[in-house]
Length: 361
Image (cartoon, rainbow, N blue to C red):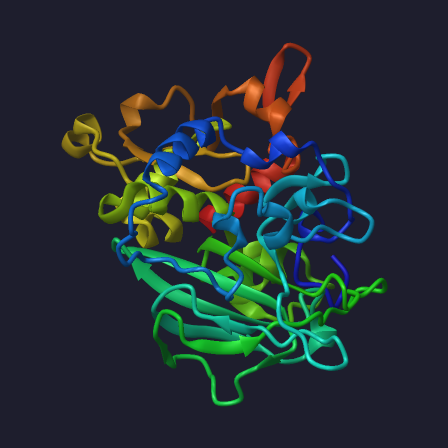
């Protein structure tokens, strides 16, 4: 990572598109779409997440190319979440929403709206410090789950906003733009809002980063991009539209396809305390005491299921033990490179171990 880029290499904008059907990122998308199409004509009740701009083309038949914008020279699929960059080898951990309002100079003027009620967590008004340019992060609590939304490439952020300020859903927080510190920049035609929904990995991130990257700057502290694990916003919108009042964020997270299952021999670490609603019951651990956790990770590295395990359920004293790998999912979504084959065996890569180290630091 260079000195001014808070995002890890797998989040940077090497512009490449992918086949259209790769946009799903999840095997269950077809099922969600079927439910959504059946309910599309029914008025939708108020829901936790709203669209962050006035662009509503995502709900129009064939409107994807009017809602998403891809990188220069690429189709709209490159603006989706997932392994959509560099021929599927690079993760784009958000969606890029197309500008629909411009001033006389053809610059974007779309209001950016809070996708959910919450508070301001972080504001970066210095474009030179991030390839996301000016960006801000909001903190929310939905179904008792702490979740964050990120809004990037902003033209300007509302001047009165600061950390801790309360924000209502739909409240104007910024103006869509094309700020960035990358050499290629973002053209007027491709101005967009980069939008993320994610989970915070560890509030001790600055200490972890200093220990692991002692010669590199961390301009954004806890809000460094490596410290947020993304959920696909498009699928969140589809899932809650299909579920209506029955939408629960926990259901969405746990409905993800698992890439791998790992045993972590550590009874207490920040992520399991912060995301206790994702922990599932285990009578053996409840009776004998928790010695660690079995964690299912999706291809983005999000812990989607967490099961406490007793000491008797660990076959070795190793801190991490890879239990299983979904080979089809790894083949479909390889961009995080959390696991790899070593001969006939699957093993955690350095990226996979580094993620677990950050989760448990």
